[in-house]
Image (tube, rainbow, N blue to C red; front, side):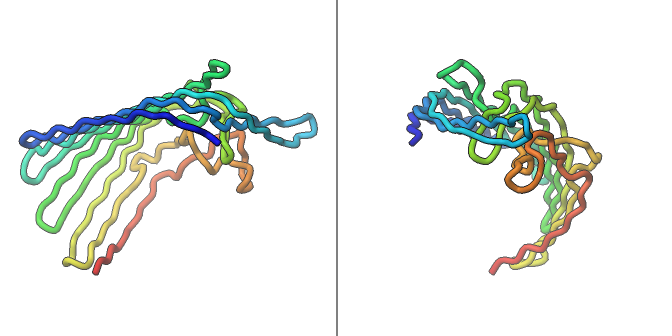
Length: 207
């Protein structure tokens, strides 16, 4: 079994219209279970698992600033890093650097928000290596996606929401995409694009 020794720490700050926070971790994993995937000359795939030692670290930081009684903006940044200490390679299945910028307007029972999600390219990969559900098979490109949503609270029990995800119909794929897994009948050796422009509506009920 894997054995992780990890240190987590964080900070919070609040002053007037500003709320900010940061958290980070650093850890050592003994007997990390690393899967290696191979394809033979007949096109048949197989996998094997070994125990390795790994180092991991990462962090998140974010802030919210109230511009006025009705307007609020927020931003966040997250990063994760991992290394296979046994052979010096990158640890597979690590998410890339990701940032989010948001702007929200609230007036009585009405609210509207926009979110810009920006993800960097991931160049630290270990091709053919992964975990029990997926593997690294290539580097991935960065992307940016913008979404809008609005909501109206009818009363204390009902809330109506609608929005548009991927407003500019961007073609993109996540670096960690479990759809790219042969176990559910899709290719595990190619990127699976996320949905394009998507309209949605929702009703929330609470009692």
